[in-house]
Image (tube, rainbow, N blue to C red; front, side):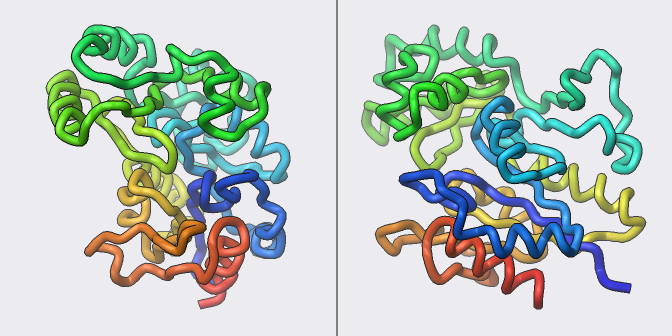
Length: 272
């Protein structure tokens, strides 16, 4: 019997190209995962509405990890198989919504309190046009990116020293500041790694065996996820630089950026 597998992946700069968000170069690996019935869990800083739209485009049917692990969406028809007990009130649109961080309203209240002491701009203070300019998204897509539930992306406009003080101050209020590919993300005390470890247990229940786990990412906010799996893969950036961490010496480094690099990494790792 083959060892069961599960794949976790970041989106922007990983499965999706950094500049144009295209994923067509990843189609061979996506097809291979479907053929082998290997679950592919999308793990991103994106909102639930953004990820549900992408999930439909990819033809994906697996759980989603949204807003850097602050919110999980588990399809209602997978709850029993994954051993997840859900309050009926947590189910909306066919998905169980599992909040693992803090509500955005609570995060914004604190950010409002400290805004006079530091220079930064959060999505809550931006128009859809502002978000589009910072991300390269269309106006419609930028609006979906603004519909956050459990985190707040910010553009940092202050000094590195101020960022350190800002981070320490938020930590005292049970918040984290996590660096992503484009923004810093303010969120509760959770991360992508927590969500991945939780879902690994769910799939162990589903398969009746510990699955071999693969994760792919490109940014500092992917470190916790990459360190939580058996086979981490790093997708390099367009300038040739890449994520580096002493704990990731064993990581597979893709030969190119974005979807093409993702494709190579997935095909290599699932065949090992």
